[in-house]
Amino acid sequence: MPENLSEIVEETERRARMAHVDNAVQSLCRLLAKTAHCSWVVIYLLDRDLKEFTQGRSCDYSSARLDLLGSMPLLPKKSHLLKKLLQERGYLLPEEPEGLSLFAPVLDHFREEFHLIFVPMLVNKRMTGVALIAREGVHQPFSTAEISLVQDIVSNAALAASYSILLDESLDLAVEMGRRVDIIFALDEINKAISSSLSREKIIATAMQNIERLIQCDLVVLFGAENGALAIMASACFSADLSEELRKGARPQLEGSCVNKAFESGESCSIGTLRTMGGLSYLDDLLCSKGMQSLLALPMISKEKVGGVLLLGDADADRFLKDDIFAVEKIAGQIAVALVNAQLYEDLENLFIGTVTSLANAIDAKSAWTKGHSERVMRVAGDLAKALKLDEGTIERVKIGGLLHDIGKIGIIEALLEKPEKIAEDDFPPMRLHPEKGVAILAPIEQLKDILPGILHHHERYDGTGYPGRLKGEDIPLEARIITVADSFDAMVSVRPYKKGYSVEDALQELQRCAGTQFDPRVVECFCRHIRDKMKNQ
Image (cartoon, rainbow, N blue to C red; front, side, top):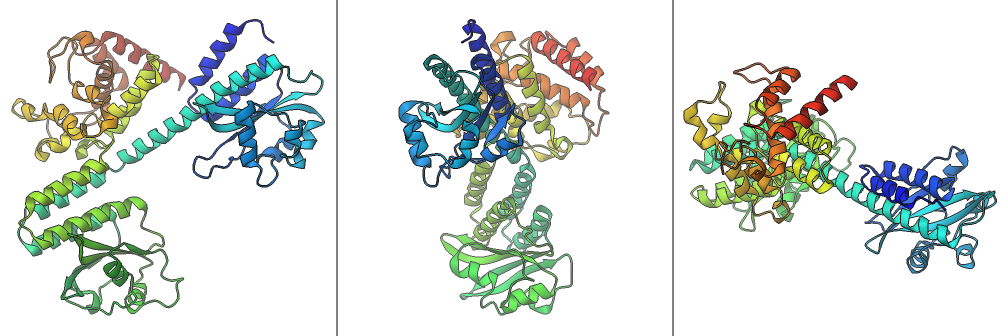
């Protein structure tokens, strides 16, 4: 038993802040080796969906024999019993009577050389995994006091691993959603065009022009329902000539086809590889002869009635991914509503707003000049928050706030965002509204309420001359002060049509020059030090 318990606590707290599960495992191994003379550890996390143990994670044991423990060494159908025993007792020794009936013979190879103990990884009394811990046989078996210490250390590791998994999943989701910003603008463009027109032909033409640009597929065919049957309203093929049966006005034979299935079921229908399928319908075989391999047919539904089918095709197999399907489903719905009644502009606009709200939970809306800006601000702001040694909750708010800080620009006149020269003073009033517009867009999402202050106030100035609230100094939320520095830095080093990008050093000097007036001096000092140290180490 170690004498300096404060050292154990300090090391445990440091491990609890680990960013990755593997780092937490490594830290756990080292801490157990240091405090309880343990040789190695294998961690088996519980899959939340399958309720089974995942492949083991281990470190600090070079023997190839450890590969034998890649899977939990249990006899068949004993997983539930092991979990129950560990929940009740808090640990389990393999040589105990209860253990002898649970574990596979492979564990005997290790019991001859090591003292083994299984300890549950508990978070809020819920098991998230199991740690198999080994001590060389030359040492004494685990004492009661040592088992208690090991349980405490493993519990902290469980908390670190659980948080790391949740953090990684949320950040991955945020970044993935950030990549969908192009989908938002394309949907916005289509919606504006078809919602502002009373012309059936213009609605169809606009939809056809933008679908291919958004999805970049080889074939787009729009079928409309007429007297219970489908006819082609518009079609375009970008890799081959269209046959007469696929042109506007044609009524191709649809029995058994992907299009007919979508029309009759009211659900999307897809085919990944036409060439390998037997018994193709007439239409699907015709499309295959034109070089199509992937098909995606989506019903156009309005007021619970299928009014047509949108068909996409591509020469590559398995072309249409989840994001493509999501986007095209929204487009199909927009077209259906517009064609049913072009005068229902307000209803269609509300439909689009709902689409954008659901898609833009954590996305920014940017102009073409600033593509990628918000993702960079998220990364820079997150690194700065870490350099300021803020807690994980604040770091998370800063990252998501950085990703979303300009989302209000989706409500700004597009001409301003696309201006090829520096924005004139007369153009600033509507631009200054984007923080408030962003908050209005995100306010209905309860989970984002703690992020809104950073978005609302990221254009405040430290001297109180910013907007929208003219807040000053420490009255400006810390998240906003951090996002302001990251936002300004990225804007300075980025190329714009009206200016060249600053060098990194010039941008840092400009931040320092404006510290105390535009920026928080403490945040600027930390940021400049962090960037310069990073540059030295590259």
